[in-house]
Length: 263
Length: 262
Image (tube, rainbow over all chains, first blue to last red; front, top):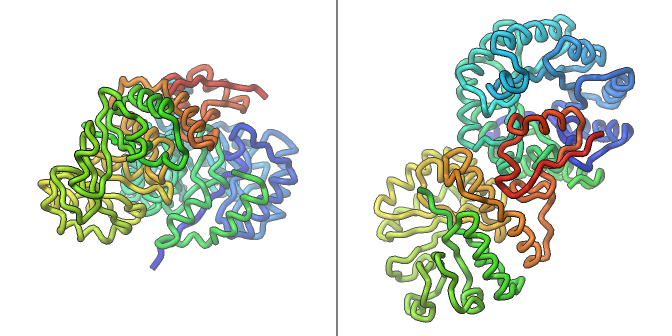
């Protein structure tokens, strides 16, 4: 029997970072509508709402989609969270840096600060009654012990889903599977896996992550995204159709790619 | 140390490359640290004088044909052909068929091709089975790339003790792409960490010239736009400190970060 898994399509958020890809507002709404009709579990539509236009955009997408959950990505700041909440998405995806490089070099902060901010932001989202996914940004360069301790803290405050993000695309299939497996062993959280294709392994990593227990896999149409892109939606369905049920027909994804002229 | 055999020149016959192009390929692939090349019989004839410091591998039909090809390091034989200590190639389409390896224990050098669906299975157990079954054999793994998982399969073989893989530049012939496997092993298994790879852009141009096929601009390792940054906030972060956001420095592969601010 096939294992049941779910897709988050992030074409409109991460995919749009692909150089040369610029969809009009109408195209984005139409694309979201079609993704919804395919049976996509969640559609990630934007990054931290910046104003009234963004709020209206999310509202339009929600109207156009019957069943897909609509999510917005937010940095770990109170201001961004407040803006995201105003959009009334189904889910706010809170991106938190978990690697030494990101915490200490990029943000010039420390783990104590991170834990404090994380709890403040997570609390704000949950208090607002919005669904929450906490994304472990740069997980591939993080310490597994640190990620496990964060996962346990998040579960204790009521978070249900965390995302493992291979932000710089350096994971291999066995490491991807191992990270997911270790997190599943220490928590009951739903694990979402977000791969990048810098080493040509986004699909392989997503397959092993799914087999190791990640219930949700992030994809983009045509695998578009920054640098070498993300996990290709169609290719993932193609490779996994004999053992995973994503509830989506790959032929429909192919057709959608062609309609929007995505590679 | 893992050995990578690049089989690009075993798949170029249809494109009729010139002798000069073949020589240039040999030179450039050496520049990125590959010194084991599989070639076709046509390529062998075109090369004439074999380039130095490269070990060449060639598939032949019969043991007796060896003498026609002086300068070849190892010959490759199909399953079932009597061999000397050359490489015997076995095609295994499905990872569930690995049990048939038992019949190949007597060969000292084996190449396993196919296994495109390796990741569907518990591949660590399968690797153990291979090693336990073929204790006396040197095993080369040449995963197929039908599901675009070839480089992942090759990398995990190398990382988990496999001694050899066969790949091809830009995945020609539906093999795991050489450049992806090299970089994955470099980043995760310290494979040739100081090896210069700045010849990659020229190899890409040569590949496009020979095959008349453009390499997609977002192709991992080779794409012309993989270090092109378009968004505003992201560009600031990358330009200020690229290592915070990039998997490896662009300069390693002969490229530079390019940005266009919005």
